[in-house]
Image (cartoon, rainbow, N blue to C red):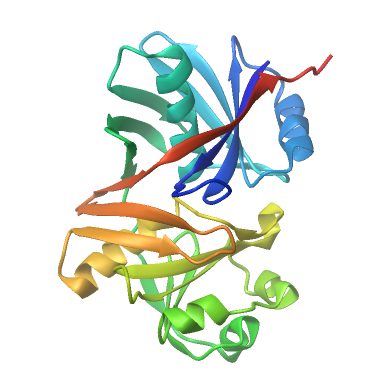
Length: 258
């Protein structure tokens, strides 16, 4: 199995979010795909199979398969553009979240994702206790999104892993306006075997509409304030969002699974 590790949403070496990318000739049993992802022990491992003019794409965390992953989609497109589909400017994927496309824009890889509108929900004492910060607003879509006072609160946030699990959400995202960008965030998904994800593309399907309406602008730059850090270039397109970033190859090789 051809295998790559690509740092997505990267600005310098050892930043961004590393994703595993496995290129297959045909689908293998789900249990084997999960075993590979568990052993890789990255936030996500993506698996690709070509079908006529598009690629089927699936994403696995160390614990289970998920329905949408941004950084592993960007990493998959980088691998295809760099090593397999050198003569095209756009890659089409078929996924559990529908059809996704990635276009190459000079040194950026721009993903077209569905927007995920959020519903405002009441703030609970458990939410504030889980993040250890004052919460201005709480919203929910796939993830629980907590609006904090500023980017310093986001950077200093130290969530309690046990309490985050008790919130009953797939993942927790904290966000605020940025000082040197439009908005910042951090993302925690202990249920998926990821306490803190370095840079999360899929959460921006929720964050982009949220911040576009607040800031009154469609084009924005976001940063994820994890230890590795990363930059996301965003555009609100109504029912869709554009999520773009840079990528860098870290590893290329083969996996032996028999």
